Length: 340
Image 1: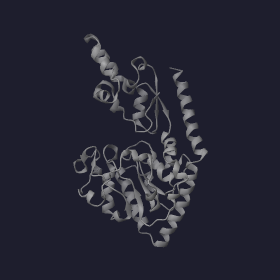
Image 2 (image 1 turned 90 degrees about the horizontal axis):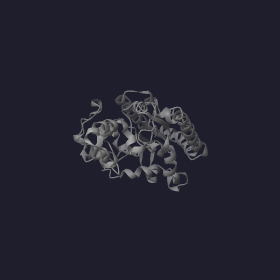
Image 3 (image 1 turned 180 degrees about the vertical axis):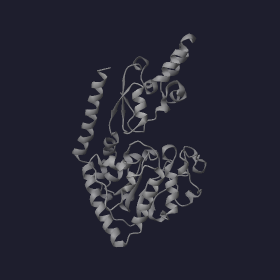
């Protein structure tokens, strides 16, 4: 079994000999490179053609690469997954982030510093990386300024990601193109390392009311939720989920409650990424402009829901749901392998 269960699948990123430089860099023993360089010239093209079709199977020893391989993954509604299936992989779904986040954020269940007494901003936003699938975060950052919400959010901004300045970013989706080039002037620089994903900052949750969760995937058709969506749950914080369409429904399918009618969650049904992003910003603006009494009631009621979610997140019931789901999927995959 190959475990590719924390990051979104990317079929092309590991596509055999076509991407041999990737394997030279990341494969410790460089078996595929050695395999090519030592075979007789008459067999070289055959070896190359084999490597092209192996994809992630290159991570195994050559003696195992031609066998059926199970692929542990954590996404649904995925064309990438279908390509792996057609390439001979047997998929096994597991929401591994659920298991991982319970461990990463385990102290939140008992942390006295998470006692809520907001004296800060209405919204908490963790906004670090913006390259690749996260380019929508640049558009969202610009929207916060357009909606004049910058004083309502606790957020930092990183003007550089993957050694590139955001002003030089070439957008994959032109509809998410930004027109402002002064984003870094409105927030402190985000110097948080990627390893911070495995932790939480109690003071952030003490002094904000609602988290705006910026997921890894947004402008995409897949369902793939990470620890980002589970951190506010572990910390008993209400949230809006900035992910792909129906991500909130996906989260609810595991037994969590959402915050309707106190928060308008119609954004979850919008398939167009720009319109979905606008709907989230619209709801942030509506919430921030509520009369004081209505806003206080919203916070009170949503925090009651958030507390129930936290209790469920750390419960044996949720743990067993995740484990039982994996065991069932693994058994089905083994049964399928036995028919091959």
